Image (cartoon, rainbow, N blue to C red; front, side, top):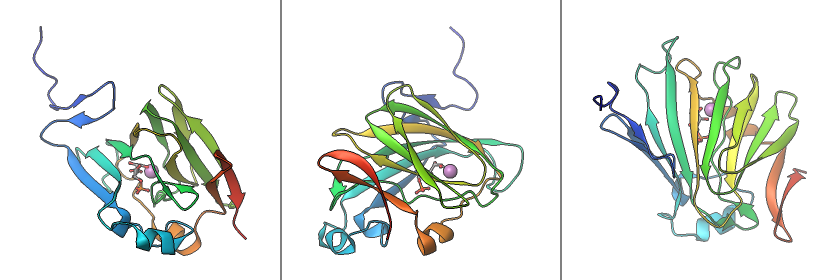
Length: 188
Ligand code: 6PG
Ligand code: NI
């Protein structure tokens, strides 16, 4: 047996969770997601501490420095806010040319993608599905299943995150549970 790889990170192959001393943890609860869901009144009526998602990331270089690769696992709880599934905030990369891969470990999800012309589509996520996020494409993930959804992401260290555009303009369509079926509904 050799020794552990130098970076000291292991991946739980069932859940995608990153384990190791240099893993950074981010938690998003209902109170952190103002303006993300269509039904803001329903979100405000929720327990502010209700866990929506967590991100475990391994950033081996300062953010913004070119040439490195970052890893992060996102774990999204099952649940809805009104008829919208628990989901991530969503963002463009600050450097619009920067791409990303997602690999699903557990659960059932939807990767919602919107290009710069505001055309929105989604890809179903299931264990083993690999997804490519092209340049100039906003991305967000919804948990459409009844158990924890988890996926591992890999992206360039100089991609950055532009949350402001989505905060201001949103996605052009929302993934809603219509008669129990995840359906993309154009925003009015
Ligand atoms: C990234 C990835 C991914 C993402 C999380 C949480 O660029 O870092 O797309 O790690 O950040 O899934 O989603 P939000 O960043 O949109 O909250
Ligand atoms: Ni991203």
